[in-house]
Amino acid sequence: MSEPLQADGYEDALIGVGWQFTQELRVYSVKKVLEILMRDMSYEEAREFYDFNIVGAYVGAGTPVFVEDEEFD
Image (cartoon, rainbow, N blue to C red; front, side, top):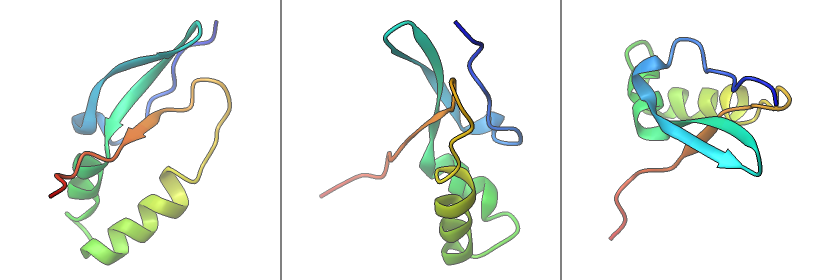
């Protein structure tokens, strides 16, 4: 079993650990990731960057999981 990968620079968005079979995965809050990105960019820019460069990047076994944690009506 490989070590779970972390999303560098997004430590404040880490909300827990998840499991898939015997693979441990780090779980991050999308809302918190976007808040971190919006320190330097607009929401639209942050969302585009997140969609393409973060959640759109598979880096092998142990790739982090990102949870959409916005409130729904």
